[in-house]
Length: 143
Length: 121
Image (cartoon, rainbow over all chains, first blue to last red; front, side):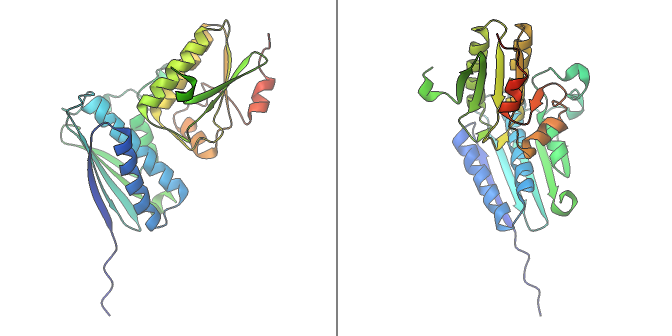
């Protein structure tokens, strides 16, 4: 018997900085995750990571330029969620972001988005000059 | 800014400003900026402000929201007051733990427990 093809939910949305558009994208991803019965903790982790990556893209990548957009792509199946967040900025060096958990940095109000992404996702890697973040959530590793 | 558009509800409980959020998700940057402005205005209007921020009903929050809490904490301390947080559900508590902000904030399990510890006027 030929095995049935593995079901995959894929999508891509180009966003301008508009909360309704971002919410629509988050809804589409959440719908895909729910269709594979991802648990609540995974849904929380992925939603937070996407939110942080998109906001970093608008703020630190596109430098709040309203003409520039952020693209989100997702590829979700029963085992993993792979997400790409791509901005139109010049990129940055993620290693240059100071560790916000050090005592001397605890009272600095910014700089926690990337560390939350790294904590909640199984892998997170920047491509190119640093304007393309690829994130993997491996369901088995995180359950 | 009219109270009808506010993203927070503030109640004065014997000198302690108890803040609750209108929204389940504290993610939208414009809403977070608005919350920041409202909280700073409240703190600047009080001498030695006592503020309790309850997260009852909150399901998600972003690092930008954490940034606002840090700003509010710094301003409260600068003005000789006290800030406490309460009613944080476990998934959000994990965000505080990962960022080690649980070391910075005074966090109580419930608003009732937090209120007991404030210095009343």
